[in-house]
Image 1 (spheres, rainbow, N blue to C red):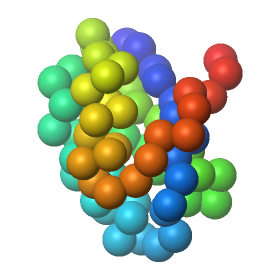
Image 2 (image 1 turned 60 degrees about the vertical axis):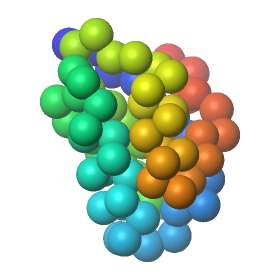
Image 3 (image 1 turned 30 degrees about the vertical axis):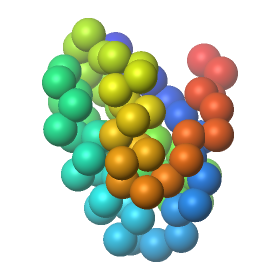
Image 4 (image 1 turned 90 degrees about the vertical axis):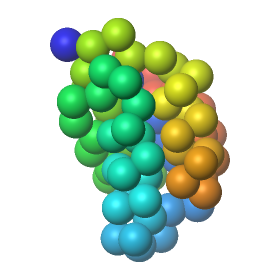
Length: 71
């Protein structure tokens, strides 16, 4: 199981959380999406995660990926 975490800008409410969770969950290999509204982070768990597809899913939901969180 792999984990990737991103700083995401533009999130302000539970609707934002739901939108990002829905879009990112559709990316192949994703098993769990955890959106932390207070920390402005999205953590993704799964196998064979494609960084570009994950970033594109966040953008598709209407938000911006500021930077990956350092491990």
